[in-house]
Length: 559
Image 1 (tube, helix red, strand yellow):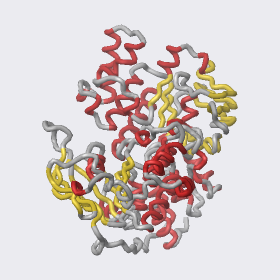
Image 2: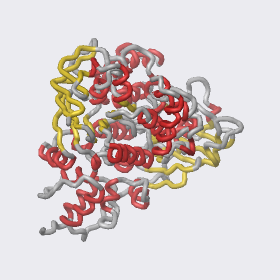
Image 3: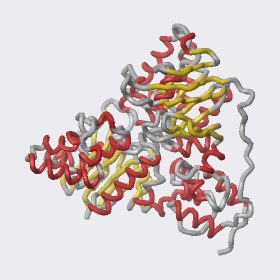
Image 4: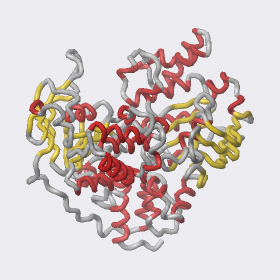
């Protein structure tokens, strides 16, 4: 039975030139788990917001959106609020109270439920989600994964029929993301909850989906089961969404095998063993050495805490980033990665230990010397960099501060905008952009300062796979120009494919550091999906391209 029907939906934002959605048709049956994917800016988030009238953007709409046979715009407020739950991308944007138990009760209180009903439902949902041990904590003390779980629980306590989630794992570390997705699967299976999920990280959600919707340029390209989507995308091998598929699907897509498309790690392992020999088990790879390079950034025996009485966030940290290196720092939420970038950028100061930039103590830098043509920092939330009403005004603000002449300013903005593919966004408000588009605009702002060192905090968050590839190409170009890049990321696949060196952050320290192949080949949990699929069959294949290359180097088995 159809719970949601979208018929010929077309939508254009007020002031927009093009349709954000065009003739979208989709049916979601009760109890289905539906995953929607597509490039940044293709209309995914717009479509989700249209499903809940309290969040629907202003603009011109034609077509129908029927929830349980009723147009969503005509739903009673109580029905729309209680029965259609919505989890946003950034967990901090949805939390409205100071304590976990307050947050869980807030929705029920707003709907006027009796105290005994609220207490019973809150107790029930706390047990289901395993929140009991931190039930009375302050929401500000929670990790990113815990905050997102509270957001989910605070919606589920109202017993919705439809749960909508817009990239809920984008801010979570890999293990936290897996746990959150497992919770969604539990809700879907054990409660029969209808789930619609927009996600760029498809590795964990693809296998549990009943239906996958691939969007392309404001419309739906295809809707089918995960296995069929993988097989059908192989037929249009040049489509950008092939880059976004789970690793098993991408390996299948690049090898000419006449069999069902694998979608899980387990199926991917079986696919390799059934179809290929493994006499050639590894690829020889030469790695750069840092022996003769200058040290761009260095922390020696660094200690930092946010308040005098709180525990140390950085604990005897020693870290070196070499000139012209692309280094990725990985680790769990709350381990101290972002704090380290703030120290390196001069935004925070160690209470003990030393920080040197280009061999010079940070306190020796005077005025704007540290930042002008030297070091730039892209924070995790790109919105903190937006201060004007349009993208072009935000970009102009940088060149005005740096006092570039008019001709030079325009040339630089055009060059960087073209490089990041944001020229078409110039006249839009930065807050109207998708998460991935905001990241690219914020990156453009810091590139305009012409830095020698770039510090990036989760720059791939909210980006589609094609945009990540474009970002990697930009980083390679910047490296070729002599730039040094230090990046904090949860994106294991990106680090494995593009970094020069990867570091594991744990308990306020760097506990291991090595080139990607050495780093990920020896890790069990913090490793790439390609390594998980090929482990035991091939030796050092940490990327999809390496697995495919080894498969093609070996003979095919005759089945």
